[in-house]
Length: 300
Image 1 (cartoon, helix red, strand yellow):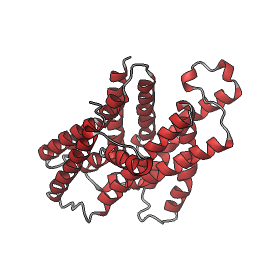
Image 2: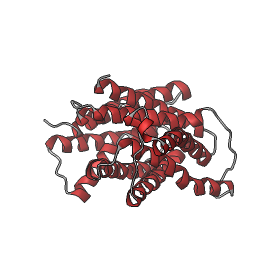
Image 3: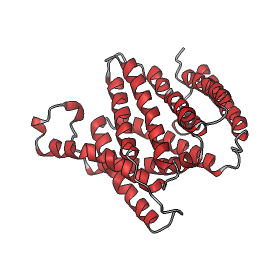
């Protein structure tokens, strides 16, 4: 399968993942939804880890083989899980209280924050097209703030918008950290994904226990079958992404913006399932935002 098709499928699963997440937290307690979602992801990797450890020579696919790691590498992956957990906690609470047609486009601005953080911390120097993309994304984000006001959501003082922005910023830091793990440290993608999924459960356990003690407000929780799908859909989306990147002729400058097209799937699903308002102006803002994302990755 071509890397372009793999990237499009990854975006499709990411969009459906966002819809499942919204269905899970809508009028429901966010902490247990997040916990059982990550538990489902870890449950997929646990038998593969056991097989890789007990009998690596009989493992059928090197793509899923979990390789041994040093204590230092385990520490790096535990930190990755803690970093992502912070982002997801903020994200889940924001998604619970915001329309999908607002929260998903904010999340889709993550390439903007990634490149700005890279400029500030890694001394990277974007080209003219990348700076044009930054300006366009900021313009689209500003336009979204006006659309949000039509629904009583004021970006500068809405705490759920602030949580989503915080989740996006931390997620951008995580993306740079992934680059460090996979490129500078040359860690195997399957090994990273496996231990990351398992450590997520460890990191999330105190959080869900705190929820059980009433630390996060409402304790009402309703089990829904979309909850385990949250973790499984994300695993599939990430797997397709890694396979796409692994192909010799793959272009990350195309793969990255293609994945951001997941916002279109989420937007359309949110409008169809929840009858979200102001679809046309939001869709126009999304179009401008995606144009900016493509420019961020343009090498011309």
